[in-house]
Length: 217
Image (cartoon, rainbow, N blue to C red; front, side, top):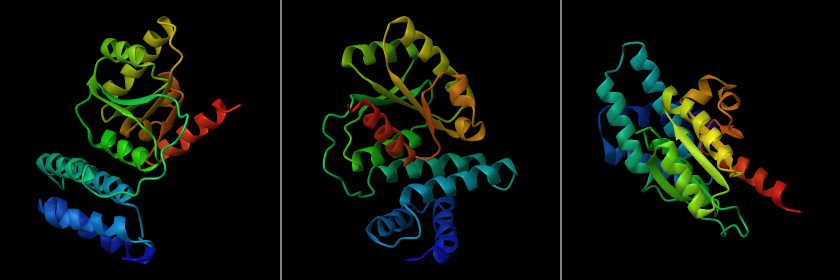
């Protein structure tokens, strides 16, 4: 499991653990990866890859919807417990928060939170909100960057309402989006008025680092 050649085998092992609802084995795999210096992948990339495989096979009629649902739930639980190395806290970083926008699928949000915390960024977790309440929270907390994680297209389209409401309130806030709809449609983030889109949780670090560099005189 220490080189790239072992990734297909590792992926099958993790896939089997999820489909058989073997939470202990799934956690062991992710924990082992987090401790290896030369792991063939990150725990985050393995989760994304395997869950996408499960979703595709469900669409092809191979897996049951219950398997898709339970695999996602197991991964949601594991993301919160898999150990990560935390860097030195980022100084003078913009106030930022993350939220689900009329969406119930928390896995993507938890993964983004995990990688940002490991990178030393402080991020407020708003949980699930609608546009009016989210804008109110952003205004109250002085948020400068809001990250939105979605799984369903209707939720992605609500980002446009968020942008319009923020603009109407005179709030200059960077919107970073991520999730399946934005991976499937590479231009959707522009259509809904976001400032950037990430295709993996790790992309959030690069995007925020870039924003921080722009703000540094």
